[in-house]
Length: 155
Figure 1 (cartoon, rainbow, N blue to C red):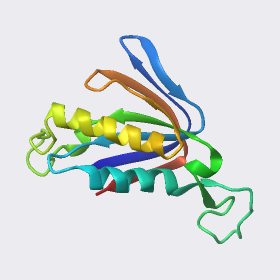
Figure 2 (figure 1 turned 60 degrees about the vertical axis):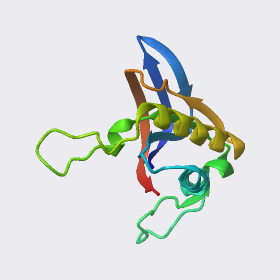
Figure 3 (figure 1 turned 90 degrees about the vertical axis):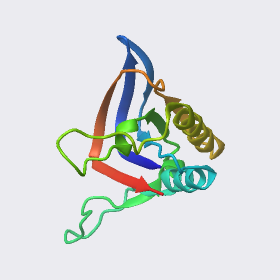
């Protein structure tokens, strides 16, 4: 399973011209599922996603520091932020050959949807307010990436 996390000041999902979900400050999580994924991957990734310290605090850093203005010392849970979770099978693409991505490495839709829903529930179980895209839909995702701060989590 792969989860691409983006720290955002806002994010939204539209389907067929209708806004179906939006969040304010928090994380946008794109989730890609592989055939061998299961409960262990979901638990690890959910813990990591909500616990990673990706948000700034109010403590100024020395100018020589890579995060000079404010450190990344607070997690999504620390700031009571929201998470928008969007299924994205293209994260499981094989781009090693040719110029067209292959998707045989992605989990079949039935498995992917079940594990995606379990991931969403695992985030909710950790006390985070969650909104979701629509599994399998053609979605338009809008976001303001804060930083930009983007991390790829794999398990």
